[in-house]
Length: 231
Image (tube, rainbow, N blue to C red):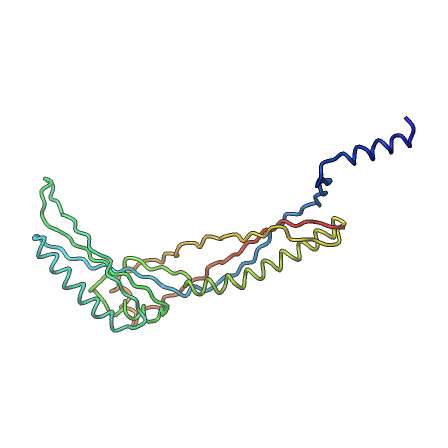
């Protein structure tokens, strides 16, 4: 078949295509990248759990004694305005003899404390003396602190991603990129870090009580993106 006949046939076939038909666009090469930014942040929130224990042979009497001790501790803690104090409930347990008969009862009352003033927490626990025991002490980041740090880190992570995209595109021989999709990774916050628990009486032995030292906590933000590459 002559060339002119081939061109005529091709023109005829193109003329018979459905209306609106067009060749599928060529998809440009795609680049997928990930970048992150992190920072060690000083923990600024302290938590403590106190327990008050009462024991005796009569359950009602023991409960009343536990209530009296708990109210005394709560009253003393109210002297410290920086402490957020909550009643953590009661636990009642029987005490058995060798023959498995009940010889008495133990009631444990709990108190939860939350504060951003560790110095005031130290002073309060030390002054409680034998009225309560320190059942746990741990630290974390305040919500507003974490959000502020994450906002700054997000900007840094996106900037790092842009730099990586530019370098990768140039290395592959492309002049520009176009953002197709951006994802912000959710970094789970680690749980509060426990601190060695000691009795309030032991803490009170050192003048106003030893300093409670918070640690640092790593905050990280990760972003990932898909980009089109263009010559």
